[in-house]
Image (tube, rainbow, N blue to C red; front, side, top):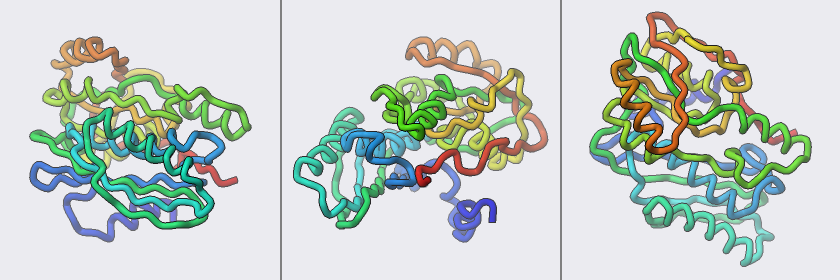
Length: 277
């Protein structure tokens, strides 16, 4: 089976499934898993960096739904041989991110095991959620930042070469300040976790629409996962205003396609990377 993830998700009938988080009233609930030898190797990152990234990738989901995080729950499998110093490093990573984004870690669960596996659940709030559904024919599609560096850095890590701690693979660069101000002008959005092409296909499927590219996008840019930039659509009449907001928040913006009748299929492999040899 090519896409077991979609098959499994489709077994559940809830209409809340399908966005970056589930909206219940004013609250948005989201969960991400961050598992050793699936999402990272411990030799690639410090324990503090691992804990921080496990939080940031989930905060990214809240941001693209125009939500701000209030609380977090952490589930963690901790290797049995971890020392108190290693546990302190993990806690420091979690707490630093919570402090930066102004939310409280209110509990969770821990077990001992062989690998470092983390599950983060966030509870966020929004008065005006932004969904994946909402694309209108003629909308422009854009993404924040630049794409491709994560794919290049991951290839270096596989070759045993170091990457700087500033790498977006190590610490995703979230665009909350830009998105929160731009949200009233945005029709639909999601974060780029599995690559621009894959996530654009999700947007196309959710809206039963296609996308006509108006500029060349390289395969590296299309297929670089773990970027955590923002993919969104908007009315062309708001382009100038959105560009002004982007400049205000020092956020590069690339407009690359138009929403059209039809469909769009991803041109990239189903899994953007795996750490197991």
